[in-house]
Image (cartoon, rainbow, N blue to C red; front, side, top):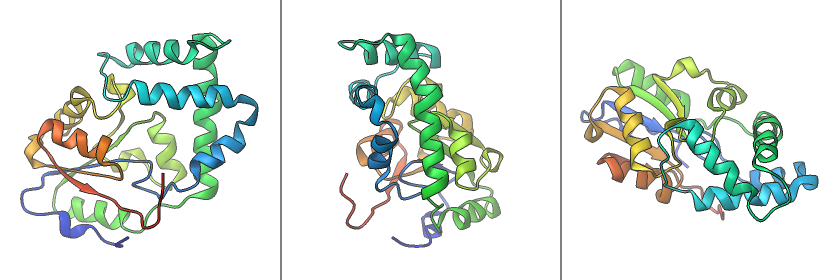
Length: 212
């Protein structure tokens, strides 16, 4: 993995949209660590992942509408309610992910130089995550949300990547045209598809030897 992505900042780029998990840091082994952390709640963990895949790319209009559908579907065919799923997700799952990131992962070497280069060229920068708690995750990596022009999660915008409506809202918040945006992420099926949905360019982060 190259330690500099500054060569991507061509004259046509007016904004960079960075994915978070798997892009700002190499998230290898995070799934295993989450399993070990939630051995007493494996059914909830499995339901979260299954539901996330099921709702991939769907848009519900608002953050609350998204989470209402998300937790209702998580609770289907299980012994717990949507209320329990919501409690576990925000009180246990997301805090554990932030804790795991803080203890085990480091910001990739190219991130801060890229942000600095963007600032020097007056290029706007966004972090666009498919998970919530964006500010907390950035802090776990040693960054502040205030360093970015936009720091937002797909659920906040109403639907998971690659929902075109969510990606369009990110571009709108940046105040530029989609064709002037460069999306950077580790997944073509979510980050790349989000970029293509609005007519933006995309750069794929590749991790050598990384099997999902």
